[in-house]
Structure formats: structure tokens, C-alpha cells
Image (cartoon, rainbow, N blue to C red; front, side, top):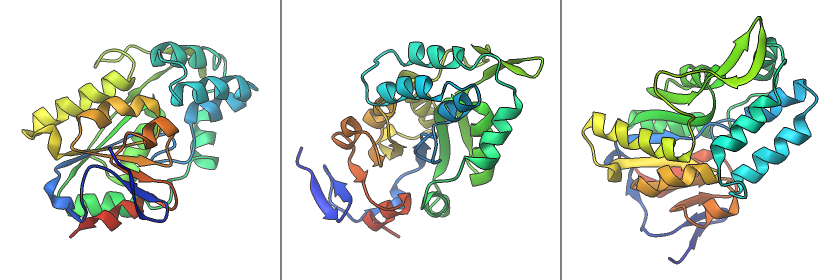
Length: 237
């Protein structure tokens, strides 16, 4: 499908703007490097002196070079064993920021009546704080194991099931659509990495935000310069 440059740093494929934002009823966001400026696992690893080792696995997984996301996450989390739980708060307070234009875009979606979903392969410690900060409706992420104030290097049992990987992101988006009584074609999926492609494939509109090459090549909207609010250039009121 032909890619068109709608404006500098903003590319589209498969539709003709402007689109009515209110046509959609749900928007699902990845968290790390999409809503926020960091990969949380890499920043936690820095506290253990293992940032380079963990970041290399993260980068390979995000590019799709490691196809088993669950295995890659378990390997990275295992390297966090012994890190003080207080490091999570330090990362949140000193390293984590919302990406440019995120608040503007989220608020525009909310004003247009869309429900908002955060679905992340990252960690609940951060996803719940980001959810509250942005006023999002739903969130799904992974929970880090903690014992005696230190990370165990494992993920805890979760009532909703297995690790949140690409397949789980897709399942959650479809489940929320079903709960809302809408077709997936009325959903928007926003992400940057290879594990976002499954949920993008079932959504009616996919947005890549400063993403990896494989994601830029498949998303219907690719923002490669500027903030997330640049997507609003493609929507009518």
C-alpha cells in the first residue's frame, strides 16, 4: 500500500483525511516509548548496573529481532533481581515524562467520547500511575514480584492470566471492544514497537509514534517528527 507524506514528518496510508475523531469509540495506547519517554525496564536495570545488558534485549525485542517477547521479558526481569523497590519510585519521579503532545491527544479523544485503554508489556507500578495521571479508563500490564522490599526477578501471578505480550494486547483490545459492544473497526491502536503490531492489525486505525521501521511500514498513520498531537491534523472535529 502506498505511503503518502501528508505533511513533513507525518505519513499516511490506506485512507483519506480528514477523519471524524468521533467516528471511533476506543483508543488503545502502548505505554513505554509511546505515552512516556522511557523504557521502564531499562531504567530499573540502571539501578542494578545492568542497563546495557537489559537495553540490548529490549531493543532487539522492539525491532522484532527477538520474536518470543515473553522470553525476552522474563530474561530482562531476571536481571532485576535484588533491585530495591524504591528504585521504581525513583524512576517514576526522576526519569519518566509524558511524551510531547500526549496530553493534548488523549484529551481530544476524551472530548470526542472515546474510551481510553493503556495496554503495556511494561509494569503495573508505572501503568497505574500513568493511567491516573491521564484519566484513562482501562489499563493492562505486568506485575513485578517484590519480597522484603526488593525485586525478585520474577513476574507475579496475575488474575487476568499470562504475560502481556503482543498477542495479549490484541486480545485485550478485542475484549474491550466486545464489552463496549463495538466493532474493532471503531478502535484506534497507538504504539511504537513490534509487539504493538498485533493490536494494530485488528484496529480500524493504527498510529505509529516515532516507531521502529517495521511498525512505520505497517501503520496507517506514522508520526516521525513532533508530538503525538500531530495525529489531530488528520481528524475533523
